[in-house]
Image 1 (cartoon, helix red, strand yellow):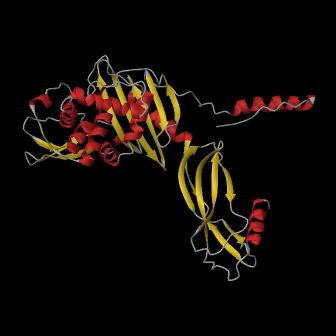
Image 2 (tube, one colour):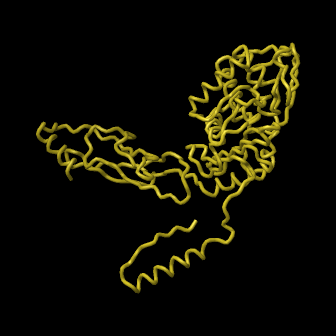
Image 3 (cartoon, helix red, strand yellow):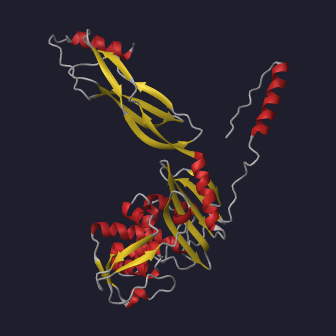
Length: 383
Protein backbone atom coordinates (compact mmCIF):
# COMPACT_ATOMS: atom_id res chain seq x y z
CA UNK A 1 0.00 0.00 0.00
CA UNK A 2 1.40 3.41 -0.97
CA UNK A 3 1.02 6.10 1.65
CA UNK A 4 1.62 9.75 1.07
CA UNK A 5 0.74 13.02 2.72
CA UNK A 6 -0.11 16.33 1.10
CA UNK A 7 2.08 19.15 2.47
CA UNK A 8 1.11 22.68 1.47
CA UNK A 9 4.18 24.83 0.79
CA UNK A 10 3.74 28.54 0.45
CA UNK A 11 6.55 29.15 -2.02
CA UNK A 12 5.19 29.07 -5.54
CA UNK A 13 7.87 26.85 -7.05
CA UNK A 14 7.67 24.22 -4.32
CA UNK A 15 3.90 24.09 -4.62
CA UNK A 16 4.21 23.03 -8.27
CA UNK A 17 6.65 20.25 -7.35
CA UNK A 18 4.29 19.00 -4.65
CA UNK A 19 1.44 18.68 -7.15
CA UNK A 20 3.64 16.70 -9.56
CA UNK A 21 4.64 14.27 -6.80
CA UNK A 22 1.00 13.66 -5.87
CA UNK A 23 0.12 12.89 -9.48
CA UNK A 24 3.06 10.49 -9.80
CA UNK A 25 2.01 8.70 -6.60
CA UNK A 26 -1.41 8.10 -8.09
CA UNK A 27 0.18 6.45 -11.14
CA UNK A 28 2.33 4.24 -8.90
CA UNK A 29 -0.73 2.49 -7.47
CA UNK A 30 -0.82 -1.03 -8.96
CA UNK A 31 -3.26 -1.38 -11.83
CA UNK A 32 -4.70 -4.58 -10.35
CA UNK A 33 -5.59 -2.93 -7.01
CA UNK A 34 -9.34 -3.46 -7.17
CA UNK A 35 -11.98 -3.06 -4.52
CA UNK A 36 -12.84 -6.41 -2.95
CA UNK A 37 -16.18 -7.70 -4.22
CA UNK A 38 -18.16 -10.73 -3.00
CA UNK A 39 -21.45 -12.36 -3.98
CA UNK A 40 -22.74 -12.40 -0.40
CA UNK A 41 -25.65 -10.23 0.70
CA UNK A 42 -23.83 -9.71 4.00
CA UNK A 43 -20.17 -10.35 4.82
CA UNK A 44 -17.36 -9.53 7.19
CA UNK A 45 -13.65 -10.23 7.67
CA UNK A 46 -12.04 -9.84 11.11
CA UNK A 47 -8.75 -10.32 12.91
CA UNK A 48 -9.56 -13.38 15.02
CA UNK A 49 -7.24 -12.29 17.84
CA UNK A 50 -8.62 -8.80 18.36
CA UNK A 51 -11.98 -8.85 16.58
CA UNK A 52 -10.88 -5.85 14.52
CA UNK A 53 -12.95 -5.49 11.36
CA UNK A 54 -10.76 -5.65 8.25
CA UNK A 55 -13.50 -5.51 5.62
CA UNK A 56 -17.30 -5.58 5.69
CA UNK A 57 -20.42 -5.44 3.56
CA UNK A 58 -23.85 -4.96 5.20
CA UNK A 59 -22.32 -6.57 8.27
CA UNK A 60 -25.15 -5.49 10.61
CA UNK A 61 -28.00 -6.57 8.36
CA UNK A 62 -30.17 -9.15 10.12
CA UNK A 63 -30.39 -12.37 8.10
CA UNK A 64 -31.23 -16.03 8.49
CA UNK A 65 -27.98 -17.94 9.16
CA UNK A 66 -29.01 -21.58 8.67
CA UNK A 67 -26.69 -24.22 10.17
CA UNK A 68 -23.96 -21.75 11.10
CA UNK A 69 -26.28 -21.57 14.15
CA UNK A 70 -24.60 -24.80 15.26
CA UNK A 71 -21.45 -22.84 16.14
CA UNK A 72 -23.35 -21.60 19.19
CA UNK A 73 -25.04 -24.95 19.84
CA UNK A 74 -21.75 -26.85 19.68
CA UNK A 75 -19.87 -24.29 21.80
CA UNK A 76 -22.42 -24.58 24.61
CA UNK A 77 -22.47 -28.38 24.25
CA UNK A 78 -18.69 -28.63 24.52
CA UNK A 79 -18.61 -26.30 27.51
CA UNK A 80 -21.14 -28.53 29.24
CA UNK A 81 -19.15 -31.60 28.22
CA UNK A 82 -16.02 -30.13 29.80
CA UNK A 83 -17.86 -30.21 33.13
CA UNK A 84 -19.74 -33.48 32.59
CA UNK A 85 -19.42 -35.33 29.29
CA UNK A 86 -22.47 -37.38 30.09
CA UNK A 87 -23.84 -40.25 28.03
CA UNK A 88 -26.99 -39.28 26.12
CA UNK A 89 -29.61 -41.88 25.27
CA UNK A 90 -31.23 -40.89 21.97
CA UNK A 91 -35.03 -40.66 21.96
CA UNK A 92 -37.61 -40.37 19.22
CA UNK A 93 -38.20 -36.75 20.24
CA UNK A 94 -34.53 -35.98 19.69
CA UNK A 95 -34.50 -37.36 16.14
CA UNK A 96 -37.83 -35.79 15.13
CA UNK A 97 -36.17 -33.02 13.13
CA UNK A 98 -35.85 -32.57 9.38
CA UNK A 99 -32.80 -31.78 7.32
CA UNK A 100 -29.18 -32.93 7.53
CA UNK A 101 -28.48 -35.75 9.94
CA UNK A 102 -25.75 -37.86 11.50
CA UNK A 103 -28.15 -40.79 11.39
CA UNK A 104 -28.99 -41.12 15.07
CA UNK A 105 -31.54 -43.77 16.07
CA UNK A 106 -33.66 -44.01 19.25
CA UNK A 107 -31.91 -46.14 21.85
CA UNK A 108 -28.38 -45.31 20.70
CA UNK A 109 -26.03 -43.84 23.27
CA UNK A 110 -23.14 -41.41 22.85
CA UNK A 111 -21.56 -38.58 24.78
CA UNK A 112 -22.27 -34.85 24.53
CA UNK A 113 -18.87 -34.24 22.95
CA UNK A 114 -19.72 -36.79 20.25
CA UNK A 115 -22.96 -34.95 19.49
CA UNK A 116 -20.92 -31.75 19.05
CA UNK A 117 -18.67 -33.58 16.58
CA UNK A 118 -21.70 -34.71 14.60
CA UNK A 119 -23.27 -31.28 14.38
CA UNK A 120 -20.02 -29.57 13.34
CA UNK A 121 -18.92 -32.13 10.74
CA UNK A 122 -21.99 -33.38 8.86
CA UNK A 123 -24.19 -30.61 10.30
CA UNK A 124 -26.45 -33.10 12.04
CA UNK A 125 -29.74 -31.46 12.99
CA UNK A 126 -30.49 -34.58 15.02
CA UNK A 127 -27.24 -34.07 16.93
CA UNK A 128 -28.07 -30.43 17.68
CA UNK A 129 -31.60 -31.30 18.78
CA UNK A 130 -30.35 -34.20 20.93
CA UNK A 131 -27.77 -32.03 22.70
CA UNK A 132 -30.33 -29.29 23.38
CA UNK A 133 -32.82 -31.70 24.93
CA UNK A 134 -30.12 -33.53 26.90
CA UNK A 135 -28.84 -30.27 28.40
CA UNK A 136 -32.04 -28.32 29.03
CA UNK A 137 -34.93 -30.72 28.49
CA UNK A 138 -36.23 -29.03 25.33
CA UNK A 139 -35.05 -27.11 22.30
CA UNK A 140 -37.09 -24.11 23.46
CA UNK A 141 -35.37 -24.03 26.85
CA UNK A 142 -31.98 -24.48 25.23
CA UNK A 143 -32.63 -21.52 22.92
CA UNK A 144 -32.95 -19.33 26.01
CA UNK A 145 -29.45 -20.42 26.99
CA UNK A 146 -28.25 -19.60 23.46
CA UNK A 147 -29.72 -16.10 23.64
CA UNK A 148 -28.19 -15.51 27.06
CA UNK A 149 -24.78 -16.45 25.72
CA UNK A 150 -25.36 -14.18 22.72
CA UNK A 151 -25.94 -11.26 25.08
CA UNK A 152 -22.71 -12.08 26.92
CA UNK A 153 -20.86 -11.92 23.59
CA UNK A 154 -22.49 -8.58 22.65
CA UNK A 155 -24.33 -10.16 19.73
CA UNK A 156 -26.87 -7.34 19.78
CA UNK A 157 -28.61 -8.22 16.51
CA UNK A 158 -29.06 -11.95 17.06
CA UNK A 159 -31.98 -14.08 18.24
CA UNK A 160 -31.96 -17.88 18.38
CA UNK A 161 -35.06 -20.07 18.19
CA UNK A 162 -33.74 -23.46 17.07
CA UNK A 163 -30.48 -25.23 18.00
CA UNK A 164 -30.12 -26.56 14.44
CA UNK A 165 -30.69 -23.37 12.45
CA UNK A 166 -33.87 -24.42 10.67
CA UNK A 167 -35.82 -21.43 9.37
CA UNK A 168 -37.95 -19.35 11.67
CA UNK A 169 -38.90 -15.69 11.27
CA UNK A 170 -37.54 -14.97 14.76
CA UNK A 171 -34.27 -16.82 14.14
CA UNK A 172 -31.64 -14.42 12.77
CA UNK A 173 -28.20 -12.94 13.16
CA UNK A 174 -25.71 -10.73 11.33
CA UNK A 175 -22.31 -11.31 9.78
CA UNK A 176 -20.77 -9.11 12.49
CA UNK A 177 -22.43 -11.06 15.30
CA UNK A 178 -21.48 -14.42 13.82
CA UNK A 179 -17.87 -13.23 13.64
CA UNK A 180 -17.96 -12.38 17.36
CA UNK A 181 -19.35 -15.83 18.11
CA UNK A 182 -16.77 -17.58 15.97
CA UNK A 183 -13.82 -15.72 17.51
CA UNK A 184 -15.06 -16.85 20.94
CA UNK A 185 -15.70 -20.43 19.82
CA UNK A 186 -12.25 -20.79 18.26
CA UNK A 187 -10.72 -20.09 21.67
CA UNK A 188 -12.30 -23.35 22.87
CA UNK A 189 -9.69 -26.03 22.14
CA UNK A 190 -12.25 -28.85 21.79
CA UNK A 191 -14.30 -26.81 19.31
CA UNK A 192 -11.23 -25.84 17.30
CA UNK A 193 -10.03 -29.45 17.14
CA UNK A 194 -13.34 -30.67 15.68
CA UNK A 195 -13.86 -27.96 13.05
CA UNK A 196 -10.28 -28.22 11.76
CA UNK A 197 -10.59 -31.91 10.78
CA UNK A 198 -11.61 -33.04 7.29
CA UNK A 199 -13.23 -36.09 8.86
CA UNK A 200 -13.83 -37.24 12.40
CA UNK A 201 -14.43 -40.56 14.09
CA UNK A 202 -17.29 -40.67 16.59
CA UNK A 203 -17.46 -43.36 19.22
CA UNK A 204 -20.87 -44.72 20.23
CA UNK A 205 -21.44 -46.28 23.65
CA UNK A 206 -24.42 -48.31 22.49
CA UNK A 207 -23.93 -49.99 20.11
CA UNK A 208 -20.17 -50.16 20.72
CA UNK A 209 -19.10 -48.92 17.32
CA UNK A 210 -17.16 -46.08 15.73
CA UNK A 211 -18.49 -44.11 12.79
CA UNK A 212 -16.56 -41.80 10.48
CA UNK A 213 -18.12 -38.50 9.41
CA UNK A 214 -16.78 -36.23 6.65
CA UNK A 215 -16.71 -32.49 7.23
CA UNK A 216 -18.88 -30.49 4.80
CA UNK A 217 -16.40 -27.60 4.80
CA UNK A 218 -14.59 -27.90 1.44
CA UNK A 219 -12.18 -25.07 2.36
CA UNK A 220 -10.37 -27.51 4.65
CA UNK A 221 -9.22 -29.36 1.53
CA UNK A 222 -8.32 -26.58 -0.88
CA UNK A 223 -7.49 -23.42 1.09
CA UNK A 224 -4.04 -23.31 2.67
CA UNK A 225 -4.23 -22.74 6.39
CA UNK A 226 -7.98 -23.27 6.74
CA UNK A 227 -8.87 -24.39 10.29
CA UNK A 228 -12.70 -24.33 10.17
CA UNK A 229 -15.51 -23.48 10.68
CA UNK A 230 -19.12 -24.21 9.55
CA UNK A 231 -21.35 -24.39 6.50
CA UNK A 232 -25.09 -23.74 6.30
CA UNK A 233 -27.97 -23.71 3.86
CA UNK A 234 -31.73 -23.33 3.88
CA UNK A 235 -34.05 -22.04 1.17
CA UNK A 236 -34.66 -18.88 3.18
CA UNK A 237 -31.07 -18.25 4.29
CA UNK A 238 -29.34 -19.24 1.09
CA UNK A 239 -25.75 -20.41 1.27
CA UNK A 240 -24.08 -19.38 4.53
CA UNK A 241 -20.47 -19.98 5.47
CA UNK A 242 -18.15 -19.15 8.33
CA UNK A 243 -14.44 -19.83 7.88
CA UNK A 244 -11.20 -19.38 9.77
CA UNK A 245 -7.64 -19.65 8.52
CA UNK A 246 -4.17 -19.23 10.00
CA UNK A 247 -0.82 -18.48 8.38
CA UNK A 248 2.45 -17.36 9.96
CA UNK A 249 0.79 -16.54 13.26
CA UNK A 250 -2.04 -14.54 11.70
CA UNK A 251 -5.58 -15.85 12.19
CA UNK A 252 -8.60 -14.40 10.40
CA UNK A 253 -12.33 -15.18 10.41
CA UNK A 254 -14.70 -14.59 7.50
CA UNK A 255 -18.50 -14.76 7.46
CA UNK A 256 -20.85 -14.66 4.48
CA UNK A 257 -24.64 -14.85 4.62
CA UNK A 258 -26.74 -15.58 1.52
CA UNK A 259 -23.72 -15.97 -0.75
CA UNK A 260 -24.31 -17.81 -4.07
CA UNK A 261 -20.54 -18.06 -4.64
CA UNK A 262 -19.46 -18.59 -1.05
CA UNK A 263 -16.36 -20.74 -1.65
CA UNK A 264 -14.79 -18.11 -3.88
CA UNK A 265 -16.00 -15.31 -1.61
CA UNK A 266 -14.12 -16.82 1.30
CA UNK A 267 -10.91 -17.33 -0.62
CA UNK A 268 -10.98 -13.63 -1.52
CA UNK A 269 -11.78 -12.58 2.04
CA UNK A 270 -9.15 -14.76 3.69
CA UNK A 271 -6.52 -13.65 1.17
CA UNK A 272 -7.41 -10.04 1.98
CA UNK A 273 -6.85 -10.69 5.67
CA UNK A 274 -3.40 -12.16 5.15
CA UNK A 275 -2.45 -9.24 2.91
CA UNK A 276 -3.42 -6.74 5.61
CA UNK A 277 -2.00 -8.34 8.76
CA UNK A 278 1.35 -9.47 10.10
CA UNK A 279 2.44 -11.34 13.21
CA UNK A 280 5.24 -9.74 15.23
CA UNK A 281 7.12 -11.21 18.19
CA UNK A 282 8.74 -8.51 20.29
CA UNK A 283 12.25 -9.71 21.11
CA UNK A 284 14.48 -7.50 23.25
CA UNK A 285 17.09 -10.08 24.21
CA UNK A 286 19.72 -8.04 22.37
CA UNK A 287 19.06 -5.07 24.67
CA UNK A 288 21.67 -4.70 27.43
CA UNK A 289 22.51 -1.86 29.80
CA UNK A 290 24.21 -1.06 33.07
CA UNK A 291 22.38 0.75 35.83
CA UNK A 292 24.30 2.26 38.76
CA UNK A 293 23.65 1.11 42.28
CA UNK A 294 21.92 3.68 44.44
CA UNK A 295 24.85 3.68 46.85
CA UNK A 296 27.42 4.19 44.10
CA UNK A 297 30.43 2.14 43.10
CA UNK A 298 28.51 -0.76 41.54
CA UNK A 299 27.16 -1.10 38.02
CA UNK A 300 24.34 -3.60 37.66
CA UNK A 301 24.00 -5.37 34.29
CA UNK A 302 20.48 -5.79 32.91
CA UNK A 303 19.10 -7.50 29.80
CA UNK A 304 15.82 -7.46 27.88
CA UNK A 305 13.74 -10.57 27.21
CA UNK A 306 11.47 -12.02 24.55
CA UNK A 307 7.88 -10.79 24.78
CA UNK A 308 4.45 -11.24 23.29
CA UNK A 309 3.50 -12.16 19.76
CA UNK A 310 0.84 -9.80 18.44
CA UNK A 311 -0.99 -9.40 15.15
CA UNK A 312 -0.85 -5.90 13.68
CA UNK A 313 -1.65 -4.14 10.41
CA UNK A 314 1.27 -4.44 7.98
CA UNK A 315 1.60 -0.66 7.70
CA UNK A 316 1.75 -0.04 11.47
CA UNK A 317 4.85 1.14 13.32
CA UNK A 318 4.76 0.62 17.11
CA UNK A 319 6.56 3.10 19.34
CA UNK A 320 9.24 1.53 21.58
CA UNK A 321 10.11 2.93 25.00
CA UNK A 322 12.65 1.57 27.48
CA UNK A 323 11.69 2.15 31.11
CA UNK A 324 14.50 1.74 33.66
CA UNK A 325 15.11 3.49 36.99
CA UNK A 326 18.11 5.80 37.22
CA UNK A 327 19.40 3.81 40.22
CA UNK A 328 18.82 0.29 41.54
CA UNK A 329 18.75 -0.64 45.21
CA UNK A 330 20.43 -3.81 46.44
CA UNK A 331 19.81 -6.58 47.26
CA UNK A 332 18.93 -7.79 43.78
CA UNK A 333 18.59 -11.39 42.66
CA UNK A 334 19.62 -12.63 39.22
CA UNK A 335 16.53 -12.71 37.03
CA UNK A 336 14.71 -10.08 39.06
CA UNK A 337 12.57 -7.73 36.96
CA UNK A 338 13.98 -4.23 37.19
CA UNK A 339 12.35 -2.50 34.21
CA UNK A 340 10.46 -3.04 30.98
CA UNK A 341 10.36 -2.29 27.28
CA UNK A 342 6.95 -0.94 26.28
CA UNK A 343 5.46 -0.98 22.78
CA UNK A 344 2.59 1.35 21.95
CA UNK A 345 0.41 1.72 18.88
CA UNK A 346 -1.81 4.78 18.58
CA UNK A 347 -1.09 5.55 22.22
CA UNK A 348 -2.23 2.13 23.46
CA UNK A 349 0.16 -0.39 25.04
CA UNK A 350 0.22 -3.50 22.86
CA UNK A 351 3.14 -5.38 24.44
CA UNK A 352 5.63 -5.26 27.28
CA UNK A 353 8.89 -7.20 27.64
CA UNK A 354 10.63 -7.41 31.01
CA UNK A 355 14.17 -6.26 31.72
CA UNK A 356 15.94 -8.57 34.17
CA UNK A 357 19.08 -8.30 36.28
CA UNK A 358 22.02 -10.34 34.93
CA UNK A 359 23.47 -11.25 38.33
CA UNK A 360 22.96 -11.20 42.07
CA UNK A 361 23.77 -7.95 43.84
CA UNK A 362 24.12 -8.33 47.62
CA UNK A 363 22.95 -5.65 49.97
CA UNK A 364 25.66 -3.10 50.82
CA UNK A 365 27.17 -3.42 54.27
CA UNK A 366 27.10 0.27 55.06
CA UNK A 367 23.50 1.33 55.27
CA UNK A 368 22.49 4.68 53.85
CA UNK A 369 20.95 7.21 56.13
CA UNK A 370 17.34 8.18 55.57
CA UNK A 371 18.55 11.54 54.24
CA UNK A 372 20.78 9.85 51.65
CA UNK A 373 17.90 7.67 50.51
CA UNK A 374 15.62 10.70 50.15
CA UNK A 375 18.34 12.45 48.17
CA UNK A 376 18.79 9.47 45.85
CA UNK A 377 15.03 9.16 45.40
CA UNK A 378 14.69 12.76 44.27
CA UNK A 379 17.73 12.41 42.03
CA UNK A 380 16.07 9.43 40.31
CA UNK A 381 12.88 11.41 39.82
CA UNK A 382 14.64 14.47 38.38
CA UNK A 383 17.74 13.29 36.51
